[in-house]
Amino acid sequence: MTAQAEEVRRPGALRHRSFLLFWLARLCATLAVQMQVVAIGWHLYSVTGSAFALGLVGLVQFVPNALLLLVSGTVADRFDRRVILRLCYLTEGVGMLILLGLVVSGDTRTWPIYAVVALLGAAQAFVMPSASALVPNLVPARDFPNAVALNSSAVQGASIAGPALGGLLFAFGAGTVFGLCALLLLGSALLVSLIRMTPQVIERRPATWSELVAGIAFVRSKPVVLGAISLDMMAVLLGGATALLPIVSAEVLHAGPFMLGLLRSAPAVGALAVGLWLARFPLRRRTGPLMFSAVAVFGVATIVFGVSESVWVSMAALTVLGAADMVSVVIRQTLVQLATPDVMRGRVSAVNALFIGTSNQLGEFESGATAALWGAVPAIVVGGIGTLAVVAAWIAIFPSLRRIDRLEPESLA
Image (cartoon, rainbow, N blue to C red):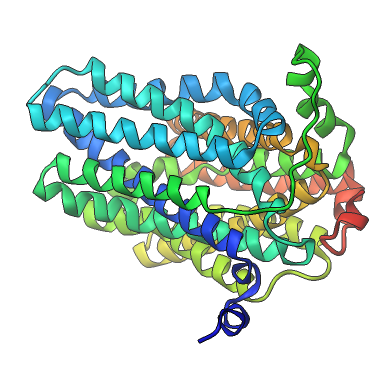
């Protein structure tokens, strides 16, 4: 089969060789990240037997990630994003090799594990803005919504398969998982090295504080960008139902750990299905109203999950929740990238990542705090109602976001 014929067979953005390489690299890297989360947790617990030690993993990874996000956005705008991604994947691959060495040598000290986890958190801070900002350089604007959907589908697919594969391979020892993760990450670095793209616009100006916070200033100056990012942030902040899944599963649904695993995977299944659909049939019209509708469906699904006493109804609600969230994510990411000049995309992507990352962390805290006060079910239902209230408020506050029709650079300027 000729290269031209093969290009015709591929859907949308995958017809472009550089995006295909990027997509494969993201798939492999995300799969490795999801596998190592399981392996590090199990290995650390087997060494320490401490739940507090497990809790420290999230903190140690979150701190460098949060501290470096604004810096990483500036770096993504001042240097070749391919080089940044390649270095990040190489760094993470080396981290996996260090963990492999610790396991093989029988070293049971915990501080080297935490040091590697911190290294992974720092690398991920640079991966997020660089990867998001790189995509518009790999495909023409007409294929960008398709590229976002495919990219999100790869992440969701890896989020489903990665933990299961990591847990399965852990039966052969933590070293097996860490070794495979290292291979996947080093392979991702090689794939990124093969990418060819349109020249990236780079501003050569002194690095100042105003340059670091320029992404925040840009987001504030663009109502459609600010509205899209803040809408998603508030929905995640209020609708963090999945954080309470263990309580709901045990006390409301009276289900065991296996069913808990199925419930936890349900949002990713819904998101993956919709992501694949949007990759095949990209959104063309009325994307602003559709984004608000998707977030409203997210809120309704949260309420249904909260009041449900049936495992299958709860699973269906969580699947719908994940599907609605994917629609919102695809529109938001497409809108933010197309409305942002190439020279600013790294910093704006960092602000976006900071908003969403913070809302995930605070959303879990909010769900836990309200559940402690009112109980799990009222906390979930109130969160869903709050999401619907935010949708109504944002429609009034950001009318320009509501009026968006096509996701095209000209209509978002």
